[in-house]
Image (cartoon, rainbow over all chains, first blue to last red; front, side, top):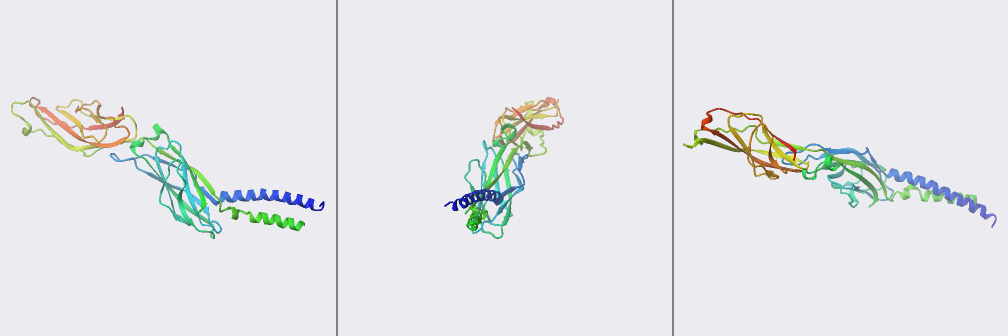
Length: 162
Length: 162
């Protein structure tokens, strides 16, 4: 018994070390599984049509890099939080290197997670990407930011097993 | 025994490596801002309107002669609250009288027929945060006693805060 105890202690120490190493590896890997790139875009509507409506604007300066998963078909969903949302915002994925892009998603605060890209096949290869195209629109009846303030969306993209 | 512990450690690290956990949810987010400028737009459908008072407009024994034109229209759009449309002529002292009325406005409340002068006058009230249009009805009035002549007005419409 006295001969076994030191080995148990060693095993326990190694177990703790293993947890620590694993946590670091997992954390790093999770962060790399999906990554939004290109910063935080601002879309400004400045023009309109008399007798019509303000003219929508688009932004395609941001993208997503994502990784295929081993033995697992995955998808990417999108949702947003925008307290006091006043204007309209849509997003669609283009130039998708793996998976099937969904039709444009209307981003409404508090929405359920909605498919952006589906049927992402298992690896290999591993690294994929797509361009995010945001379209902002409003009506004259929806007012303006000078009087009502901007809409600030926190848009969340999730890579999840399909 | 040491070897057994070491193998257990390696097995633990390997079996719970990031490839295993990569099937779990991974997410990232960014901020998207939608800003809408204050937009006010006006458009007159026709560049010029001509009203000609001839003998055909005259009634024997009646001094006043008049003619009307409804060939032009005004379209607007504004996303600001509490807005109105005003009208003004560049002629401070016209020979004859020229009046204008907003006919059948799709939004807002038309002012009574306006006699044009170099002062800004209300033309259409309560148009805040709308787009719409109306027909412009111009009425030219001359009295026989005023003789002949021509007035050329440059008429300006503006959207102002009500």
